[in-house]
Amino acid sequence: MFRLKIHLLVSFLALLAIITLIQAAPQPATEWDRHNNPCVYDDFKVEVCQFCAKLTKSPIVYPMCCNSEDNVYEWCNKYINYGGRIN
View 1 (cartoon, rainbow, N blue to C red):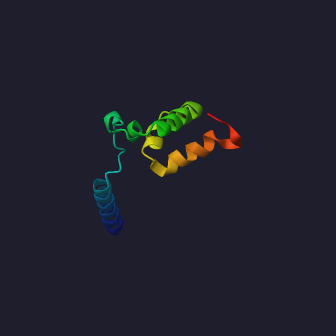
View 2 (view 1 turned 90 degrees about the horizontal axis):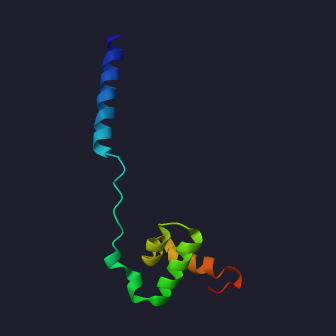
View 3 (view 1 turned 120 degrees about the vertical axis):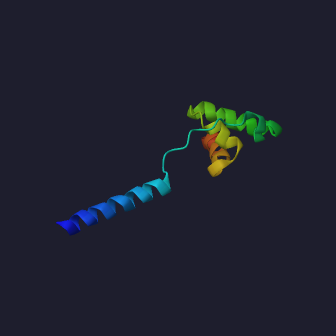
């Protein structure tokens, strides 16, 4: 019985230490920096990213497309021009 209590106490303390170290709480979302927008310098990219954001109806597409995060710009370009559709 005493060993079980010691084991539970050690397990609890180890779990508490791990939780404290990990701090896995989600970080608050940061506002997209509109002043540091790579699309400002490329009119064609602006057009592609805006049209893609409009078609997908997603608020995160435009900033991701402009910053070329996760190849979103390339995906948007293919999505917009799928089947020979001209924007």
